[in-house]
Length: 394
View 1: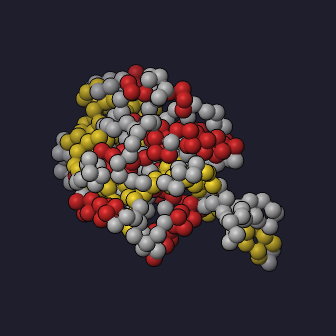
View 2 (view 1 turned 135 degrees about the horizontal axis):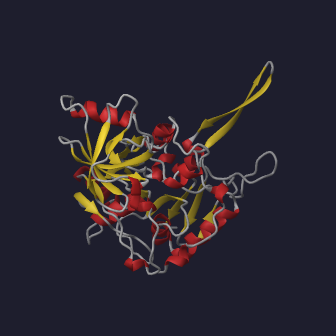
View 3 (view 1 turned 45 degrees about the vertical axis):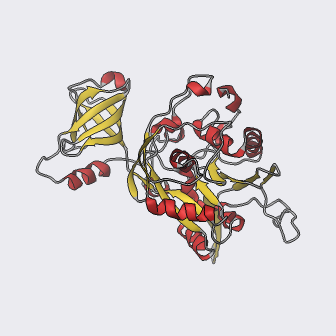
């Protein structure tokens, strides 16, 4: 397929800059007071049925008709309604990667020029070496020292150029301190690694303290991601408990989501686009649960495009998931025959993004494109903090 086939007009005000918040009205002696509270499982959910080629946006009553509120408006499905589409014995596959505060701000020696350093991954714990991106890159050269706090305790030296914006830094932190102390000190200076499109659109161009919690899945465990597996952000602890009560199984894999998911595609022919590699691990325990689910005739649901990528990397020719420990640069776009999951959930993503393409590969290009048009028309929110799409086989 061609890149241009994934283009559409997305209004700026439909890109979510913050997680979903619910408004609550409290009546007091002095009158009514309205306040907002984050409700990650109350964002909108759209449901796509592949076989019947139908798309559902609204909740249904006992007679199968669209429910309406007190004003006669249809009631949109919420993410927490997802449990109603699954049965005991089904299995959800989650990505348990954990985001770390990767975006740091500092100054350059001598000039005091402000710089941004985005931590990608640690190269050598003993030498305190990190692979990073820097802005503005043209001003950051080998040998420069960068300062990240007022007392000059956290200082880094640029020792290599890797790409146009990439650098290797050696942190000149107290050599007598332990590695854990160093990382805690480093991360204490960082912000949640929100995507560039969120940071640039916010008024102050920064993440908040709340973002470090909001941009983290409640089941996150294995540190290493520089962006969150966004579909997993919709799951609350209350929703996970409801799943457990309903007998829905949870399998966990790890894929450390990287910035390659947000890179612009610069070729019209999608077969010529190369994805960045991401580290992934799938345990035998996860394989046993998923494969047992499939053999029993129950459904397997991939939660997010990162899980789609990981499971399709590790699925065998027999349709069973295999243990894996390595890297993947798999790029999934239509047409593609999935070998493992029969259901999937994904957020609504930006035009011409690899994440939208993976979703279209799973749900079918024409049907997913129609769902995206309906989402724009009906005010759904897009991006990592946006609404989501559940894709079912029938």
